[in-house]
Amino acid sequence: MHATLKPARMKIDVGVTEMMKTSIIFLVSVVIIGTCRAEDEKVVRDDWDLKEYIMTNLIFKVYGTRTNTTIYLAFSGKPDRIAKKYVYIDPPNEFLKRFSDSPVPVKPASQFIDRRIGDFSKETKMEILLTLQILEWLSEKKVRVKLQIYRGPMAQGENELICEKNESGWVITNFLPKWFS
Image (cartoon, rainbow, N blue to C red; front, side, top):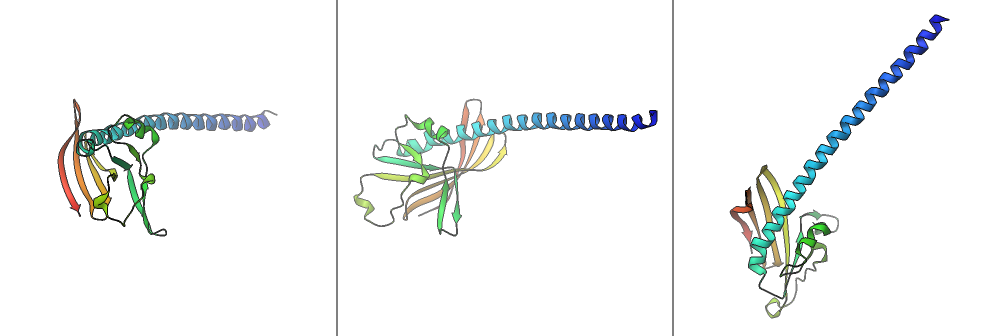
């Protein structure tokens, strides 16, 4: 009888050991995911703070005095080969709320209507499609950013910005024009 209980007891011990291993793996996973989530939230916060800085210290200084301007903002975009158009990725609504009191209305890029025909010289309203995309984090405090501006087929361009974070916040340290038309 003692021999028949011993294998059963070993199975229970093995089961408990496997459960403990599974529990430990689960707890470690939760800690790692929580740490990654906190790090991701910091990157998103830095990303948004940087994009807000560019909007307020570059874009609004250029277009902010025009009361008839609307900026349509995208965080990135990609070509849709099936629909044969470029699809923009809208910023989250929480980010757009940062500009609720801005001198120029800021809307998601998906609301932009590209009017490629007509006499733009007689228009009184200016609509700008703006893409602010993080290209690369060079370090924790240095970032490459792509800035695309589209006002129409004959008024568009792309620039690359190098931005650095110091004790007072973000600053643009280099402005590299890529192309324009």
